[in-house]
Image (tube, rainbow, N blue to C red; front, side, top):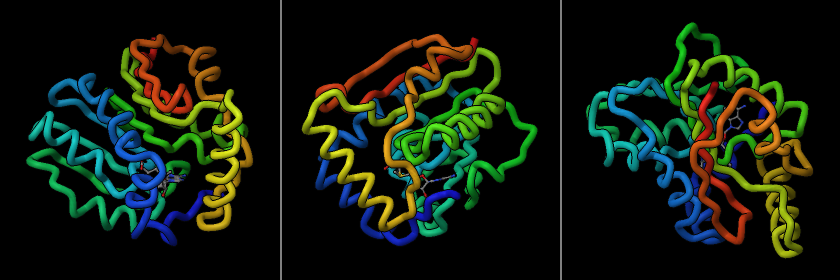
Length: 206
Ligand SMILES: C[S@@+](CC[C@H](N)C(=O)[O-])C[C@H]1O[C@@H](n2cnc3c(N)ncnc32)[C@H](O)[C@@H]1O
């Protein structure tokens, strides 16, 4: 079952800023230079849409973005963002229910794939993989499986919080990097933050 972020949508951005400062946004924005003009983009789990404003600073027009989030309150916030003259379709649904024959140039998953246990993650990863065209880019930003004690602890607290407030199912992170490395993807660029607890990676589908 998909998590429901409606309960915390009104305070989500402030909360994440409180814990990580501007790293959550910086870690997403650092990949945006890979967005080519006039791209067809799928953003999944974008939340309140802060990233849309950052993308608009780089491309004021010409992008065709499908923006999917399962929280109606997050989508309501995202709709109010400055999107310039880009063409954005907002869809309030779980990615598992999305059906389309569009092939995207770019898929963006910002702190989205960490919501799922290994089984659900693989299902969702496959869905997204099929929507990305050959040689398309997948910009993924997420938490890594921690190697440091303090990050283990922080992750436990975060997952417990999101389980109680949003019904996030997973008790440990899926191995996202391992999955990309195993299937059809070249690693193009990687940035690490917070002592490697967070990674922003550009993958190219081969
Ligand atoms: C941890 S938040 C990340 C929000 C934002 N990207 C950020 O970086 O702050 C995860 C987002 O994914 C959405 N979400 C969770 N499961 C989903 C699903 N199955 N399909 C689409 N969106 C989903 C939630 O509603 C939430 O907005």
